[in-house]
Amino acid sequence: MADIAQMDSPQQLTIPMGIPTIYFNGIGVGIGAVDISVVLNHNQMPITELKIPYPVAKTLAKALAGSIENYERMTGQTVVGAQELGQKFESASSAAVLNAAKGKV
Image (cartoon, rainbow, N blue to C red; front, side, top):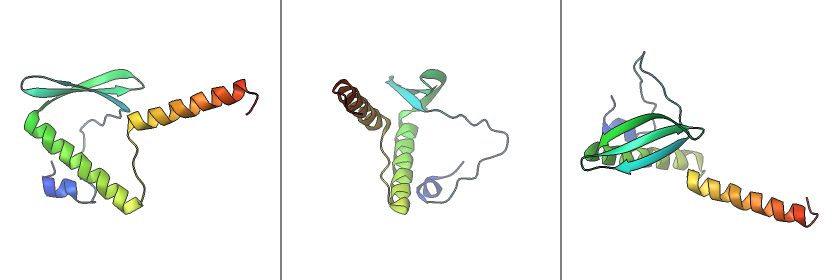
């Protein structure tokens, strides 16, 4: 497992052979008295749940934020969050429906 210094650097993480890889494109988050539950979704279907103690969740949040900041700095592109992206698609879809209703395509 990488330490915090490794996670904050733009280098690739070395992943041990044989551990499962899970792809997800959505999340649900719930809080409890001693940990946070994160449900990972694939195409809106739950695939697994993570139970994360608060200190580890905070460390994970900082590591993810730092990695995204590094990516944005290296690429010059801003990463859009899923909620913001969904709102943009919804706005674009609404505009397309209005234009179609007015006979504009």
